Length: 151
Length: 393
Figure 1 (spheres, rainbow over the protein chains, first blue to last red):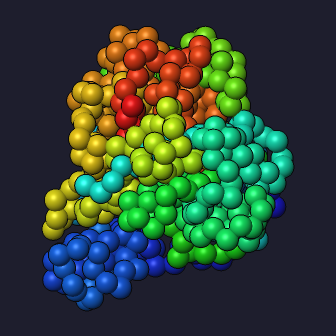
Figure 2 (cartoon, each protein chain N blue to C red):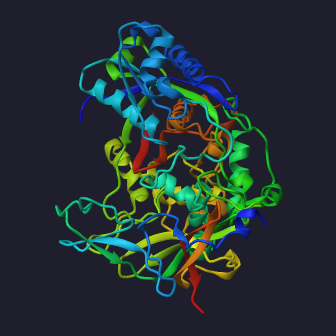
């Protein structure tokens, strides 16, 4: 247990990346953009011109993306990634899923919730979005979205 | 179609972790290719260099760097970077120059010196860079390899043994290749006993990063004939296509695919070789051998399907039947592939072309594929760079 973890929780948690998801724990959403003309979604939502080649729009709505989807595939990390990943010491393996959103017709990656391993999931399984502390740095918690299998 | 362009000579510096300057590898490979071609450096009219991103300014202007190191002689130069597809793009530039009649003979060179371990992003806080963001979230290169591997297990019944058998096959192929970094045979048991990196892929199934250099001399058919070259190999086609929106492939370094909410979904990877086949006037059924990008042993299975060797979901059968071993119906990665080389990014697509050239000439020795007439490479660079080359004897 590092001193960082001991002091965690003193400040409100911050998002690991600003503007990519809502911080509402009960109803977490990824925030995407939706083209006002053709309806294509983008995640992350920092898009200035529509990337659909048959659309010339430059107007978008910020929209919450579906918070449930199905697992397209999954894996885990048994070795510590390089920076800018911030790892606890010692490193803790974690699982990752690529999740298909039906309405948006896109696949979004993210870690699986803490404690979920590759043995707990399978392709096609339903998952939903949650917030979870990704790391703690200088006493500050940083949270990210994670996928949690639906019970 | 415009006039024929041929490969006159191929040369490589052995892959490894030599710790030397990338220029040394590039010049070694270039001189070997020139000697192989029987062409004097001073006759080269155009140099296409593959850039390297981790070797400072000389790496960004590799075409000039190699030309200076070989001795300035007034040739034209260009440098390109397309991640793992760099070599094919440089080759395509040289071919276009020759096809346009702007030169007769050109040199294409790629070389790299790589750091140890995971390929990491540039330093600093850069949340607008998808390559930075994904590492922040704990998504490394093996993450992407393993997502595809696991999907094959769940959808097509691939097994851990299938993945290991590919490593064993490639290790056998590369065992006698003087340019390969790893020349060691493995058993399936040894591969399966190596540490898990990203389930279901193990350490021996994920490619390393290497130092290395590769070069080819290309020329118009007329030039090659005038030279009296008996060992020329024709460039049938080159594909450097980008994806089509909406790209449905989960692609490094992106966190999300395109949305197909308002468009059709396309598989980029399945489209890459198509253009090269069409240009060459051949199809997958004509292929004698292929060099594909086995960043992981499992990814080689995906490539069988991307380049059309079998329908989607049938790749495991090719491996189990031994079709893709040397001696099989359509040997894949006779060079040993990335499993034996490790990746030297700007040199790797050229290394594939070098191997096909050697094979189509019948000069591959112990790893020779019999009666090799049509070879195809399959490869893809980060950020939407397709790469496929068809060579014909």
